[in-house]
Image 1 (cartoon, each protein chain N blue to C red):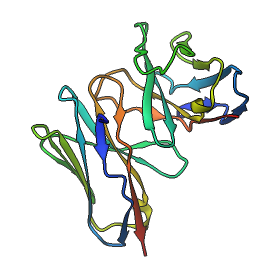
Image 2: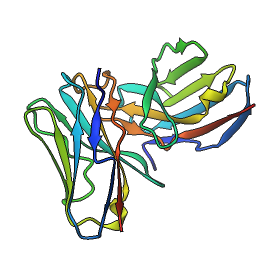
Image 3: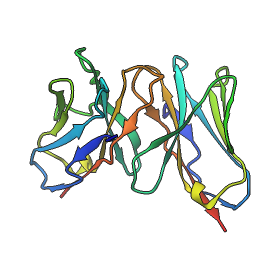
Image 4: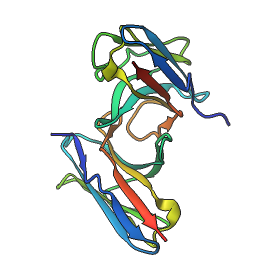
Length: 108
Length: 115
């Protein structure tokens, strides 16, 4: 079983849609949680950190449920430029453990 | 300012040859990480360095893989006797210090193809 599991998708949604991604992790000692974004043939870039209290950055909302070991990302009012792969990431120590990524394609 | 740089951007080699991949972290970042991304495996951790501490090598897949970081800055990842399954994009990242809460900034990667 992978340490971080995500639905690979692809999620195909129209512009303006709301889309949600989920992931689960197996290491209960994980301390930090992130969503990274990766565009095709580019390096991953931090989208946002995820906190138990939930956090929002514009159209993006991330949630963490430590008891269920579950992380979510909600994107509202999808834009064409949101098309990318979204990587769920946990960090039990300094290193990052990545999920396989969920591919989002936003269509006009 | 300058981000993480890696060289070469692409490397094609023959099975059995040794390769060296280079990473220049962001100036002032004390932690440096190597990951690789291959089809079907996603992104996986290889090794990380933090200052003068012993590196965490727990992700290296075999003893053909090694890395060093000289002078606390530039790092070299060496793969000896390359195999076709070593083909992947090798990504380097750096952060201000090691620790779960510090953002890691990634370089553009080196695409390695082993024929």
